[in-house]
Length: 185
Image 1 (cartoon, one colour):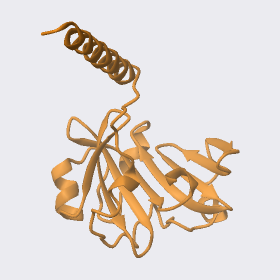
Image 2 (tube, one colour):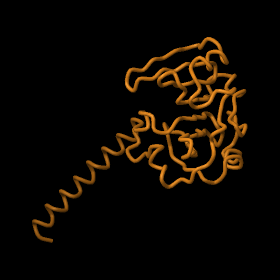
Image 3 (cartoon, helix red, strand yellow):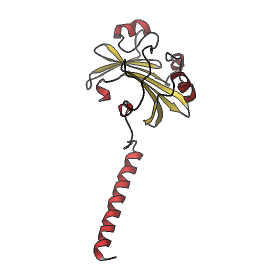
Image 4 (cartoon, helix red, strand yellow):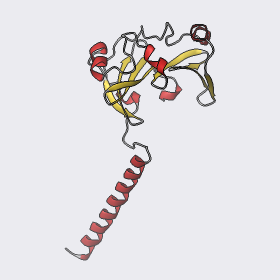
């Protein structure tokens, strides 16, 4: 090996070491540099019918007044400027709005009441991944979101997405959202 080959080898080794260090740092702080977003799976995942998805009759495109009439006064209201949206939280469930219409329904395992809410196919907090696949079928995608194993489905005709987040093979969160609103872009 001549002198130039040795220099090139050391430079390549330094680049590899620096790149590996940066990737490890990003993983350690919770940023997954190779994580895929929901819409990365849109083209490759076959569509299923999610048009009946609702929580106590509230579905995508329901109005804010419908939510308040059904669930009462929220425990928390959050307004976001960018993208302009509003969130009404209740014990175990949250609704997101743009222009006073529901764009997201979110069941989360933060309150005992979360177990009373289910999807159209009656999947609830605590159900297994196998139960989800049995009810919703094989046309799903998988990804990791915020450290949770996530399984999702698309309804391309009605522009609806549903995702189930799992911890130790048990559903701990369900998100039903409108495809294409600003958060997806």
